[in-house]
Each structure stands twice: as structure tokens, then as C-alpha cells.
Image 1 (cartoon, rainbow, N blue to C red):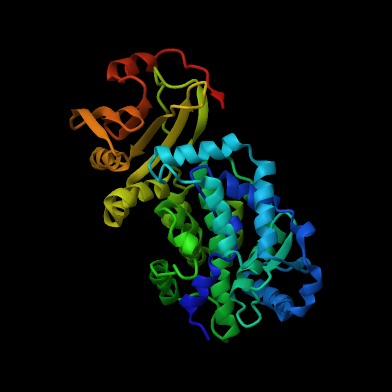
Image 2: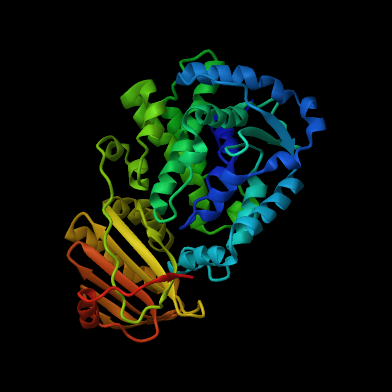
Length: 450
């Protein structure tokens, strides 16, 4: 019999289709919301697996714990891993334009969150097929079990997926996860609600099955931190070899989402099962700091600059939250600084533009902090991030408020003003503060999405 940490570790990736957040998180959203697996079912093997006989009892237990009644039985079927991989490739090809995938890839690379040779499409498919064991499809409203991944002896993963099914019957998870591509951080928060609540219910189900009070204990939640750092390379080699940002993007909805829901539950009781959907969190900051969610503290939306020599084609744009900044700091300067500094972010936006050929991308990035002191600390840290993400970084100006020069992608300028930091990277010619000030009062140029 496995322990709690082992069960949670094995089940946290059971449904990667719902929780694969990148900078734009577009691929995962479409996979999660448009799976048409009914044509791929190997139905004749369905009744041979005893795991399906446990569904009704598990749903009843989850309903008793949460107060969310089961409106109807949960449909179920099986699919092979080969069928799943073939479907994922076809779905991406049908649903996403190549330039959309490329846009997400460029944004990640411009921030230095993934290597320059990183293949976003291939990584997505590889990770999904490596980790999938069972999943609930919001579009088909059906539970799928991967052939060869029978859960007849371990019901933990099944309880997690059935928690999704139960929530879907009440709060329409397809609509809840129908994300706005302009607010990536809010999308991540929604994913954390869905996975965090299901993970919490999974833990509660295990306690109820053992005849105990179905409320996860602090020790159980603390074990999440321990299992985050375990060596799962043998089980998930693709994940283990992925960039830090990709790894943590997959972990965040499960680990932080579970802690978030537990904090809300201890404040609101069973009302929390409805409130996190009806009054959804709007940022990763609210997930990481539930008190900000309960106090309705929302991130600010700083304005991006009007770059004088930027490209006229918009490749990508969106928000950056505490999670994204935590990853930047962690990757280049260590987790201790990331944990200390990232919580002080108040809001950030980015935009990537390019010339008519779609090449020579330019990154425009602005962030606001809760004090001038923390803004200055981040400015100093960002200088090191720039030096770390490029092989070549030659500063021409390096002061307490300006860091400018040229790097691998072109000329750059980072500027600190009070609580605000601005960075422009990839310019064909040097950018001056004077030119930015002049253009900031002039007419905004028109941007056309690539």
C-alpha cells in the first residue's frame, strides 16, 4: 500500500491535458477543451477493467465530502496511448496555426525561459503522452482511462478525475477554462483552482475511505512540498529533462492549487467549493497568497511603451504574474531570491513584435512593484538575468536606473523609474530614454497581429 505522498505524486499528472500552462498557455487550453476522443475509443475492453465498477461509489463519497450532488452518472471509456498521441498531433494541426505555436515559442525564448532550440509543439505532445494515465474530458463530459494503466488497486487517480467530473456538472469547467489569451496569469489561476480542488478532494476521499475526518491535515499538505522535490526521472524522463519553467508550470496547479483551496476551505467551509468557481481568482499571486484572494486584491495592469523602432507586427502579448517572475528569478538567481522578491510584484505586461518577415522579434516588458526598494532590487536582479540568458551581453550604460547595450537578440534598454521597470530587447538600433519620452506622448502606432 502506497503512502499519501506516493499516491499524490502519481496522481498529480493524471490529467496533464488540463494543466499545461506556458506563457500563452494556448495549446493546453485547446487540448483540454476540444478533445474529441469518442472516435478513438477501444470500447470492447472497457468492461474488463474492474476499475470502472468503482466509479459510482467514489462519486458518492466525493459528493458527501463536497456537498456537490451527482446530477447524473459519469460516462467512461478507454483509449490507447498510441491513439492519444495520434489524436494530439492531429488536434494541434487542425486547431492551431503554425504561427500561433511559433508565437508562444518566441515569447518563452525572448524571456530566456526555454532554450533557443526548444520545440514547443513536440514538447507538449511528448509530455502529455508520457504522463497521461486517466483524464476527464470537459468537452465530451467523459472519463477516459489509458489502456495499460489500470487503477483497480489504486483509486487515488480515479478520485481526482471524478472530482473534475463532479465539479463540471455544477460549474461547467469548459466555460471556466475557456481562457482569455490576453491574461495568461488569470488563466493559470483558473487551472490551479480546477486541479487544486480536485487534488484536495482526492486527499479527503482517501481519509474518508480510511474512516477518518475527510479534511486533509497540515502534515499531509506539508508532504506536498517534499514530493515536489522528489526524483521522478525514472517515471517521467521527458518531464525531468524539460526546462525549469515547463516543469514548474505542470506542478503549480497541483501543489499551489491544493494549498490555495485548503486555505479557502478553512476560511469558508463547504462554501469554498462554489466560491472558487463563482468568484474565481484572477492571478497566480492570489493562488500563492490566499489571503489576497479573500481580500479581493487584484494585480495592476501597467501600460506598455510605444517603442520607436519596434516591429509593426504583433507576435504575442499578455500578462506576467508572480509565477512567471518567480520562475525568471529562480532559473537565473536561485529559489531563495525568487521566494523573497517575486511576492512584491504588483503587475506586469509584455508584448513581442516583429518586422514584416516575422523575424527579428522585439520584446517590450514593463513591471510594477510594491515599493521603490523592491523595484530597485528587481532591476539589479534583471541585469543579471539579461547577462545570464544571453551568451553575449555588452553593457554600454550601467547605472542605478539605466542598463543598456547589445546582446544576442540586438540592442536593449532597461530603465528603472520609481516602482516601475521597463525593458526593451532585440532592437536593431540603440534606444534612448529621450526617444521613449517623446514617443510616449505621441500617437500610438497601429499593431497588426501576425
